Length: 163
Ligand code: PNS
Image (tube, rainbow, N blue to C red; front, side, top):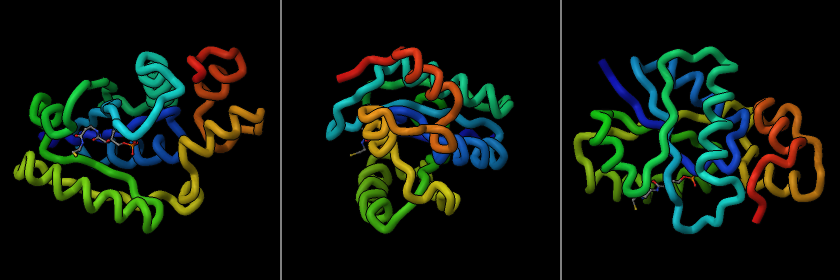
C-alpha cells in the first residue's frame, strides 16, 4: 500500500491542481492532499476555506482514496506522520523546475526515504496559477474553465477571507 502526499498552498485550488489530484489518486493507493505554509506567501483564503474548497472539488471528481489535511510544520514531518513514501509535485514551467529542485534537496536531507515524484501539468493548465486566479478575482475576471465550481460559487457568494 503506497501513500502519496500532494502538498501546496492551494490559495485557491485550481483545475490544474485538481488534474494532478485525479492523476495521482489513480496512481497511488492513497493520496493525502496537504495544505502547508509557504512562508513567502500571504494568503487570501483561510486554511479552513482552502480545505473545504479542495474537499468539495475532490468529491466532484469522485476520487474515493483522497483525504485533505492541513499541517503546520515541515512537509517531510507530515509525510512521516502519515507513513507516506512519496511526495507528488506538479511542474508547469522551467521556473517551477528550478524552485522544486531546491525544495527537493532540502526534503531529501530531511527525509531520505521519501521520494519526490513530478507530474508535468497538462498543457491546458501550464500557465495557470493561484496567483493569476487571485488577480482575476480582485478585478472581477471570468473564472470558468480555470477553477473548480466550488471556488466559483465561493467567490460569487463572497465567501472567502480577503486580504
Ligand atoms: O503551492 P506552493 O506555495 O508552491 O507550496 C509550497 C509548499 C507549501 C509545499 C512549501 O512551501 C512547503 O513544503 N512548506 C512547508 C515547509 C517545508 O517543509 N519546506 C520545505 C523545506 S525548506
